[in-house]
Image (cartoon, rainbow, N blue to C red; front, side, top):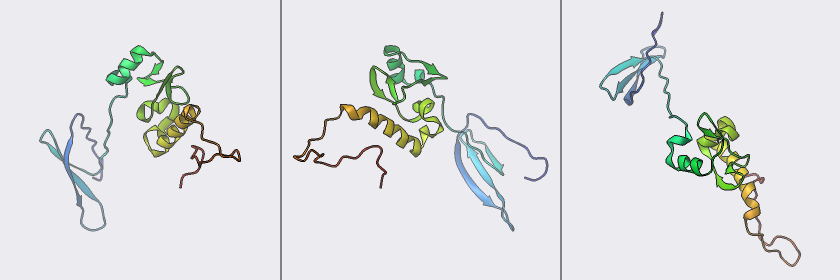
Length: 151
């Protein structure tokens, strides 16, 4: 509302429903929000904080891998190789939230997904079969590269 204002911080509750209630006249309005604990409130603004704790030790697969192939971690995130592999001698590649130290804030969006896939594709390229050559010595089939623009 207007005036001094009050901030309500609600933790460990889930929103069951929310409805926008427009104010009469020149815009504005409020949200009527119901929570899983049975309470409800009316708010002018709603900020939602989502997510969980990013820690390798909380994901059984990564916890086992970390025990078998130890690498450095920082705040629960793995210190991956530049090509997003777990370690130089371990060809497991990681993308998404656990690749944040290499990919930055984009690790969780489409730009990060593309950047990560380019890094991984480049690292895997030497292990892929060599394309067959035609009589003229050129590649017989067209191959897409990670450097090529997408259409």
